View (spheres, protein in one colour):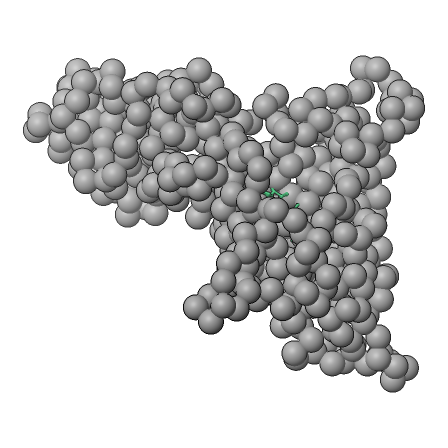
Length: 439
Ligand SMILES: Nc1ncnc2c1ncn2[C@@H]1O[C@H](COS(=O)(=O)NC(=O)[C@@H](N)CS)[C@@H](O)[C@H]1O
């Protein structure tokens, strides 16, 4: 992408309304624009990051055996009356009426709707286990939306829903998602720790929140330090092995980890002081087992091997991709701006032409741009007629992992400069070697 033909509305000054670094940097880097309280437009740079986050989320959901669907954002109130949550959900629910005066709502979550889909088609235990997921916008009329995307009113959620014959089966489905979450957050460059959590309006009696440690996090968390060095389940984990997955979950829940709602100070005090971590954290995922809470009232039943009809056991599993775009910045930035992990960076390489209009640097940049693009790299070519200092500052602010600097002096010796955004190491090398290294 040539910057002269892109849309990257960088802000010079720090927006005063932004209280946390990710909110400040997302506005300054031209990633998002606030339309009203808790509602944001995704500008080109931000949308590229969101799409990369979604791709990783999707890959790990699919790896675990979940099947993707897409449900609407607008839901009928009737469904929520069946589960009894229509009145219980409270002021966070955006209630609307259509032209026929029918009561509708903008979905804050989809347990009822996915249960309706399930009950319309599945009758036999032979069709289980089943996990349906989608990545869809949600609306929750937060009383105090704040911190930019961290607590928005309209936000993107991956929400998955599992259906099993009994609790043992549902526990296996829960464990599949648990492992998928460990892999997902690690691939996003984050250290997420699963913590016993409260179940709140979703319900049930088994729940874990996946928390990343960040000083601006809204959650207060307590955990054993060793979790930070646990290795992540491998890509070839056997998701069909109940024992194998249970061993992974047992290991990842063997040490103390709890949010403040579930904190047991006495148990935490038993952890060696130098192993105790108490910090702020950001909840990036939350998984629940809630048995027949929805299938019972909504009549979602299957005929078991004994010929008896019974309501299915369910769980739901949420990840916040839009919150993750902010959370990754909270976990990975420096005084010059964002430092994107390569897996989610909006572009792989920023090519900086320090003398746009000069035939030598222009020709070299064109060659680099085309060869790296042909090699499948996402390249942002800063071809603007602007001072080198402004180009360096923009490249640092938007956090592209590699900067390839093409200036007339080093070019005269057939050299370009490669800078790694994280850590700042610089290296002078030939154009061929640079293309080789990045291609
Ligand atoms: N206001 C919000 N803004 C941005 N992300 C949010 C917001 N509320 C929740 N999320 C994200 O969505 C994830 C799941 O939300 S949740 O309420 O915990 N769980 C559910 O809604 C269940 N139905 C899981 S399918 C959270 O872990 C968080 O990452």
